[in-house]
Image (cartoon, rainbow, N blue to C red):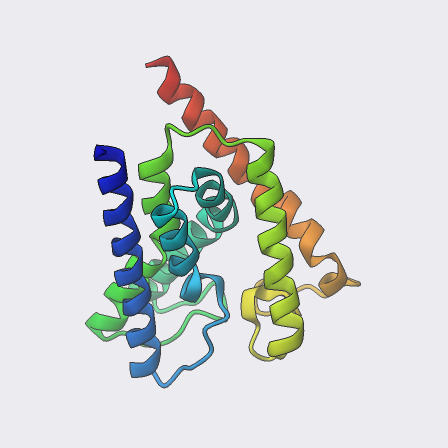
Length: 195
């Protein structure tokens, strides 16, 4: 019963984080919610409400590293005035800054509450299905100028032109983001088990 209550409360927490993302975007006159970080709290909330640890871990696989990099780059820009990633906004009001940090901590928060759950092959399969859905949405509902999730162009992330980048986005994301994060989650799980 205690685990059920905890997961319900976490589901509510992620709905609140999603509400914060919506309010932040509306207050900033930004109505494109296809960025992973702008919608990730919804699937996390669903995962916690349904007690689907594998699904939650699969979302963590996609966002943990990217959100960590974003927070570091965002804080660097705030303190230095120099941007490392072109997609980091210039807004510096306290609500925008604090809400952005909270939103980008969503997968870290999910990991804190699921680190004792073993990531499995099913977790990897769920991750690849989710990134494929992100890919399809970006292809049909966004433009390269928007740079959403760096699917249609890597130019806002790195100053290189990669041949066939868009076609390779799913396998690249799987190899460079999902697999390393899955390994990180597995190492954390193993260390938690050994204590």
